[in-house]
Image (tube, rainbow, N blue to C red):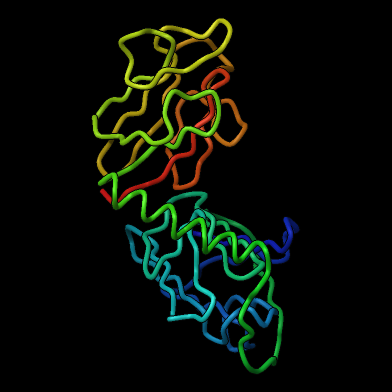
Length: 230
């Protein structure tokens, strides 16, 4: 069965196994997942399940619902997607035990935390870039020859060779160190060259599905991935 792991400041506070077709998320005690914070609306969001997919839906909440750092109204969830609601993060995947809590707070407080402001500002800027570029984008963060690169090919090569789409820097880096490949509605990063030279969010990968906001490191070059809707 699918599950949602709820964390507050990186500490696991609840594991919710999805035993029904819809689970509600909010501040009050009549929700399936209760987030005890006034930055969370009473009926903030819900996750609906069917045989093939899980969809998170924001209930027009005051402070918004984010998936992989992008504000959403409705989004299909993939394994290990991170939903951010207020100060909580909810990771979607499968199998665990269930815990519950209670709260009776009234009224939703507008969040003015540095993290919340940063999420909203970054989300706005990222969406503007995606619209302007017309699709998924790599942002050059460090040791990059560009600031923005549109991923428009089914295969985008990364490495030290002159003919690759994206040039990367680093000692002992292969001519074609990695590639980004499009499969159905998602892009994947695949390592082709030397081991330990291709990373996503600090972890060495051989093949990894990309999510909005992922930090890609090839050699000494660092990029941030923005997911445009396919």
